[in-house]
Length: 195
Image 1 (cartoon, rainbow, N blue to C red):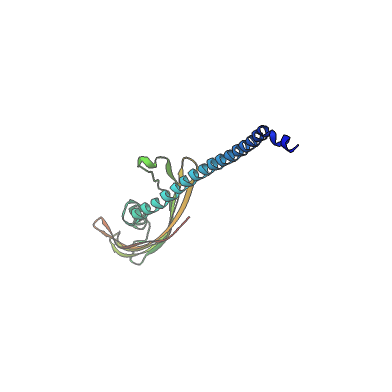
Image 2 (cartoon, one colour):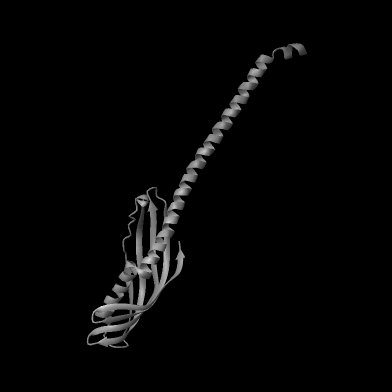
């Protein structure tokens, strides 16, 4: 009887091969599904990191623009127009004003076309004191701008986004000599960057 059972090995081998093939097929399908899922997750993670790095780079550009560029000039000009038109023009006059405005930032580089800055808002308090007057013109003032909050969000086409809030402080002196405005002893200081 033992010989008869071992004599029919071809059928047993075929069943074992089919079972092993089915197991390998199931394992292969599972590995393929996992790899595909992992690839999608990695792609989304890389895209999300791109948004993060673009947000941080934008923060550096905003800081440069505030400290010595057009955004800092825009902020100073708003404050200067306030105290040259709305403040009592006598030495020692002080003011305290809250500001809020929303400039627009656009990426010009072709490789950044899928990204955009949204919801940019700048808020701050300005305080100061008139230090000199000539006739009805403020010719000198000390300026403080505390808690200049710059908040914005960078988004991509896939819906990934990253929000940053940067806090700056400013102190400086304003002078107006025959219509030529000059800012001096300026200190712009980035105090905090948070998401």
